[in-house]
Amino acid sequence: MHVRTLVRGFTAALAATFALAGGQAAAAPAAPATEDRALAPRILTYDASGAAEFRAAVDRGAAIWNESVDAVELRPVAAGQRANIRILADNGWPRAYTYSLGNGVVYMGRQAVDQGYNTVRISSHELGHILGLPDRKPGPCSSLMSGSSAGVACTNPYPNAAEKAEVESDFGGAFAWPAGAPRNVMTVD
Ligand SMILES: [Zn+2]
Image 1 (cartoon, rainbow, N blue to C red):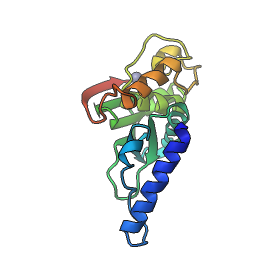
Image 2: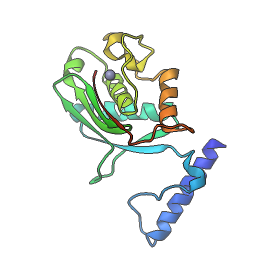
Image 3: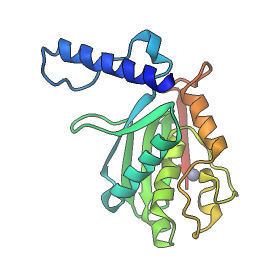
């Protein structure tokens, strides 16, 4: 039921956009009809063009979130568009600046990578911050937000059940934290 409704809403939106554009390809699909909006995932775009050697790890981290939650979907931004999330590479420690829920900048810091930390776990963890999750340290490897406290040997890039539920709650459901609501949190690691 859930999936079918989503597909119907998305197809209708695409059809409407196509008609409005006079049959030509449009830049972005129209908003879903009101009745479908509560079920449609929130689309957040990310720009990994500045992620250098970590681009594949960033794409994998985004895909893991897409596999893990229904309420939000991360998509690569179209060329020339402004993304919700920018991902950059630098020589510092990995960190995230969450300006508001779903919006911010991630740094794929080489300092942690050089120490042996897993790049996909790093990208998934930092995207978790942008999706509203705080660090949960110290913590076990089964927790994504335990970050570096789980040790270099930990390569788990998947959020646990509680972490998934928190993101679902923030982005979906009756009491969703509104996307764009101020957070202004800087999280190192
Ligand atoms: Zn962190």
